Length: 301
Image (spheres, rainbow, N blue to C red):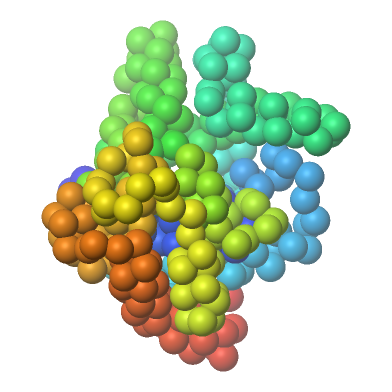
């Protein structure tokens, strides 16, 4: 049976992007069709300045939302990364296989390091090396597939390179995994800045729909989403990123393709209204189940 591994990082509240890009597929597809392992990767949350108590709270919330999204412990394995010592141990071994150049080529490191430097802060060494920890997360379990969003594909490619290099030097040890991606909304973009992904680490959230946002808050954020110049509703990711983002979200929530849906609208307002309602309905069962889990903290523990 194919083994699947993936995880979420508790650096902020989980978003619509996390759900549509990964969590929903884990619940609907992966846990039923594979030997599936899902992890709250709390060690990855330590690569930036953090409050330990907040990391603990967000780790518990992430676990609760993974359960609320439909992950069933009878069908999959759900755990917290720091509870398994082998992640950190294998990470050091793989650091002895990786190169400095490979780490510095990681797009996320370049982006995050530049952002931190603009703020006048220092960059932790762990921010540079955390892709090796991610590789350890995957390789420790012999995973065949890693379902990820577009922004994480480069890290899975690094994992593949490290596995092949280790196997060639020291004998066959690791399964070489492959990345898998959902067809639509693999990368949900920020509603106020459609050239940037909807990231959970951002502190201000007018362009971010959080999984626990109230319905009226969701509607307000979607209705205020940035669109593009021109009146015609067409799907063009390069020329019309704001419009494309709304169409991709609507397609992921209600079915169909962004291209087909674009032909059904003659105004931005109608598209935004339908997208908002589709998001509210997608999040409703997740939020209801989350409330039930919060009322039973012993179960999550």
